[in-house]
Length: 196
Length: 284
Image (cartoon, rainbow over all chains, first blue to last red; front, side, top):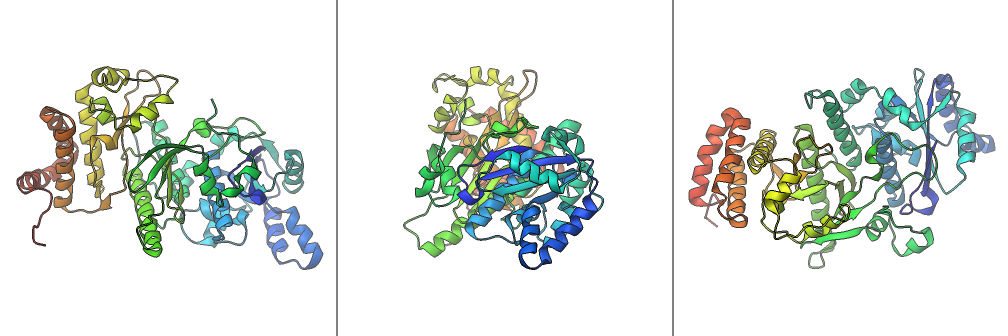
């Protein structure tokens, strides 16, 4: 798991943590749990929402940690300016990752789905010990906690390119081609607040 | 070397928004009438966890802050700033998709008038051709591993450092502009200061030519606009680099090659523009 402290973020959101899980086996259950948690009543509902208060992101659509961090930066900026488009700062990450303006599309594509096997879990919040957060993450996700450097073997570039409408080859050299596609993805996420 | 100063949350209270705090911690590079330019660190390194997957971790960003203009009505100022920041970001995105080398967008804050773009490690063509530093290049230079260059004795030697000849540099310029025009993007302020050579990562690699500052850019498919764009560059060459006719000639040849059949009409129109200047109509 990676932990970050951003001194320029407001105190209530100055830290964030993200972890990559591979071989995830409970994606379908997790998705149902999230849907149910959102409608549960009373104290029980509060507790359940606390337990799953993370962003769950389909890891095959994330190109790099900078890609993810750009989406997190945008989400915290919106939260601090009171301009969140979705209900929470965590769901805002999904919205920021998706190139179109449709919220349910964003959740369907970038959120957890029954077929998810690689998952990135994000928590944005006030400073708290990384070990506690990691334990909370492992509580809800059954899978192998993997280093974020594994991401480069997981990214599904064909899908990323499809969602970002990068049809043509950007360069003859395959490495440069991917680099340029990555740059388009990064810029698209960073300028999410600008309607293209 | 960490560029990121150690800042404590309590000390930051005088700056209200995250964007203001990013700027407060950044280094001012230059200031114009429209905006201030800073070098900043957007994403600090991890405080715990494995080292990350890419070299982007320590990559600084360039922040262009279109500050409040006291001389304008606040409402007008806010809407102008918003549309300019958005316009610049859109132009960059369009260029990226068309395969033109431009610095990528890293953050946008329309409310604050802030655009954060990828930091390009390199120097402006103006500097490399010995057109004198604009002041900003000198500041940038200090960051490059303690290596400082005297602005007066630059050109040939600095190009050698980039492993490229003057002629090849001109060809890169022509090619990049043609690619941009093919995508119907008009730069609006083509000068040698608005082009940079990116320092190549490996010694055998060819440096990339990067077009910067899309603050005056717009979209147009008109031959007139493309010809005027080239005319502006020609004048910039002539005024900043004495005896540069042959250099500009090489730029045009590379442009012609990349533009293909489009060149015929653009070239003819460029001749017209040369005769009358960049304003088509003198009727006010």
